[in-house]
Length: 242
Image 1 (cartoon, rainbow, N blue to C red):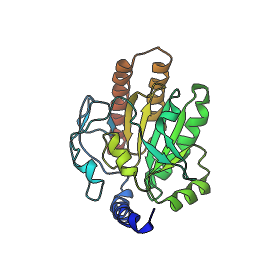
Image 2: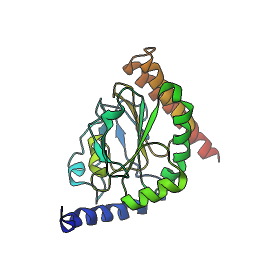
Image 3: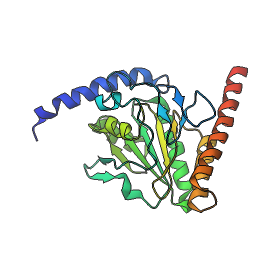
């Protein structure tokens, strides 16, 4: 294809990245949630929870027009290339519990949580947990950074279609953002913002209980929601006390 034909797309991505990078140092672009979670302001979303604000300026036009989209029950059939240009579908990892992590090289909290993602993947090998990173960034920057810090899980690159991938999940363009799905591809929850170990353990234990048949998806979502609300309350109290 002609490089000139891709110029508008690359220019659009560059403009969006510049805008989002300006917010990157603050952690992530916060937004209000209206859904099943006990808290009216929460960094966690569940299938069926509607987005209440449009995507920020510079994001994908289709995403901005879909302000009432909801997180799907199942992983959408997103297809993106890896560092070698080989395209992969998320369905390739069906049969394993999955963490889909949206990130960018310029995002401080994204970089901070990568060691945790690597650790969780190794610690839960017995549960066949897989982590798939989706980098909404320029290919060269992603390849260089992933190599420099030794990312050992699959990384797909949304150089052109990353924002559309976020939209397919019913989400705004926010970084970092991690989607948790069971072995059947059903979404348990979505964590917006930097993932911490206590939060990850709560959610991954929920996935384990669903995949082993100990708990159904509805009950797991309810338990995770309650536990995440408890953790959030504790974090708020500690922040106020500090």
